[in-house]
Amino acid sequence: MSPAPAPTPASTFTPLSLLSLPDKPALVDAFVGKDISALRTPALIVDRTRFRQNCERVTSQAEKRGMRFRAHVKTHKTAEGTRMQVQAAGGVRALIASTMPEVWQIILSGLVAEGLVDDILYSMPLAASRLEDINDAQSKCGDKAVIRLMVDHPEQIAALDAFSRRTGRKQRWSVFMKVDGGGRRAGVPPQSEQMRDNIKAALASDHVDIYGFYSHFGQSYASKSLSKASEYLSGEVECVNSAAKVARDLGATHPFVLSVGATPTAHAATQGAGISEGLEGELELHAGCYCMNDCQQMATSLVPPSDVSISILSTVVSVYPHRSEAMCDAGALAVSKDTGPLPGYGRVVSPPHATTWDLGRISQEHGTLVHRPGESDVGEIHVGELVRIVPQHACLACAAFPWFYVVDDGDTTVKDVWVPWKGW
Image (tube, rainbow, N blue to C red; front, side, top):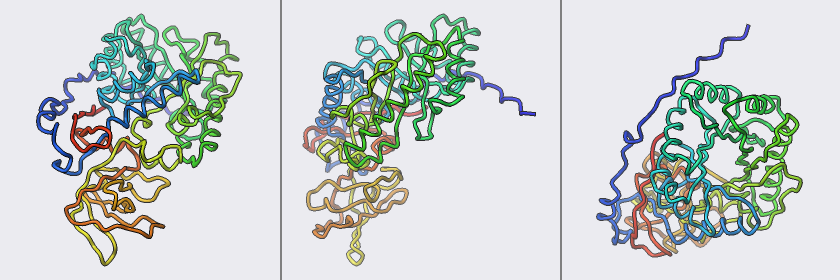
């Protein structure tokens, strides 16, 4: 006999006011106008000029190719960065958030009230305990924006039905079906029985509408060329289209949005990669790390170092000539333990004489700088020197810092301070 299903957890409303953030005006007063050499390290530096250019480039290319674009805010989680994503090129009206504080702060930023954003996807597969928060956020949006949800299991749809019946909610829930294209994260394979069950549950619901099908090809980070990223993109399009065909076979008649992307495949799409014909809906491109980029993106060969807008400022605290290494004050809690195709945990990009060093090993609060493999002309670095390190993974590095120092166009003067949204 199969065990009884676990009880659905109670939906718990968590006031956003309980999540306090550093005071931006105080930070601006303290740091704007200072040179980054005066900052306590480790410190996260954002080159605002590069950030804006990255947003413009990807968004405008998507527009030229006739694709919708949906921007993910999870990399930086800031009001200022989100506004740049939204206002790039002809404008981006659809966003993705990973956490409820991100959803709330998008609303509080004024972007919804100003009519610049009218579509927010909460991208975690639905946990029923979030429904009070989601419903309250939707009520704050009114008819100015819709909060869409991600589902990949029939019980999630049952939870939406139960909530609507219990609360008398009239507005139907708009959902993306999450499709697993082989990455084995969220979602289910497009032709699987569970996908059919998910679609059947949604079509039978009086409270749920299928907006589209969504896939994230994280495996595309293994790309080393435009042609390889293009292969991943084609596979991803076929994946979501296959799921949409299942929905058509089950009787769905309304139009779908087919949302595909990760930053490598987004670059492939905007650099001319072909898109399959015969789609069962309108193609939408989504990406998040494109505004910052990192070592993982550089490793794909689709992103040059000049397009990276994030670096970690760190102080060299000791040098060890006998082993050709040095120690800096940026460790795992500053850059994360993520790795990638490029060696180490980060790459030194400044000062010029130190750009053949990598962050080769890390402990909690410090890192070991090593000579980059294959480099013969290695400059010396000295105790007290400041280095800037591009992390392997911008999203996790950003999550480590309470605020970001913002500079412009290669300058080293702090022009602004961004405070990222924290919590879940």
